[in-house]
Length: 324
Image 1 (cartoon, helix red, strand yellow):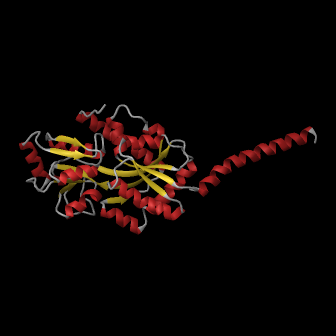
Image 2: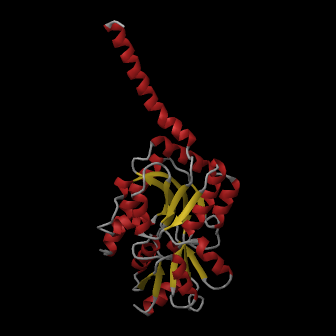
């Protein structure tokens, strides 16, 4: 082989290797997943996020023939665990607006959302609800505000923990309504709901999926929804903003993967989830929980997350909340 032929063959070999290097990740993404996928939910089992996550992961398992296993790890530990997972698509975090809230409340976290995660898709947007214990002598938001003002510091509300979304949703309500109420944090919303039904709490804000069954059984009283307008799924239930102008809390749930996860895998997950959330039976299931399917692109979800974090940072600053 002469020198010219060697150079030509060497050049072809380089081009072939480059082509294979480009094609292999794509081929791998097309085959994904080839083994079970862990879906970390930083919320308690049986809570709103857990139930929605299981509805979506069941469809993913059916579509791709691999198990998507939900792993409940409430709070910061769940997000920290997800942030340290291998960026290969086999660990997904299914979380709520608590992620943006936590970034606003805590100055020190064992992870950095912008650095350690890549947004995949916003799965749903959801109205939360304001519920009270039936023994509380109030049947509307206006009456609750008046009652709380007559007993400053005597009423309490529960949440799924310090810095959770329902903590700030209730805190924003108290701030705009001008009432002084004691916050009682729990390790998860289900525990707070249990104490509310037992009469140890006076009210809380929570997802419809975790509260409406108790409302139907008469164990809790539904006063309002947290979205700025009434929910299409509950048109007869007033919005808090009708009595407390300017109030708004729209919850969301979405999927994230560790940073540096291959782009092709992220796109594949997004496309399948976006398809799943538009299925008639899935949309019907979401509607029961006052949730609306979204299925946004990774880019749209990234922009949305930045806006959410900025909004809650302003609320936290105005309310003077700091947890560390």
